[in-house]
Image (cartoon, rainbow, N blue to C red):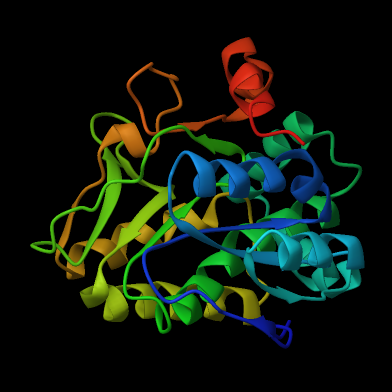
Length: 257
């Protein structure tokens, strides 16, 4: 499939917190994330939306949230779904596990969510061209404290897990002004997978492994991607069942209109 036309524009020009979501996640998490970043994080926000409603775009306009968006038909994912079903293997298994956890009705629905997870980084590369410093985080999170500025000794920061399940986590990226080559390289790989209809759950993390080590990166502090919800952390990220954690829910409620 081809990447849809980008609509809207980046209106922020300083340190920006960036996230992306579809219509459903905007209602569940997007407004809280944006409001918490503005109030507790004390930073500007840019949001990329997939298939937004008019009232969601209006909310961004009236709440000083810079926004871009795109419209994509679920039918565009039919070929990727067929390719995945035909290939089978570990990629299909991971996708089917994610379908069960996400209550997806078919493979196309999970492929759509996979596309959103990947395309957000293609759009991040475009946002970074306008904003010198960007923190990109998952939308199902809450910013709890002022966002710190990390050292410019590293072009970007990403959280790396070590051990038997070693991997880079796509859920938090801090980009300094020198991160352009990295984020563009990452975006190019993701664009290629999408255009070839190679989409399976967590491909956005898999392709980080060969890309990240080519560049000047540092370890993103866990306080900026904390799924254990420690009291001193800047950002709480609610993965899976953690979305129902009472501490996380209570934190969200502070930013619910």
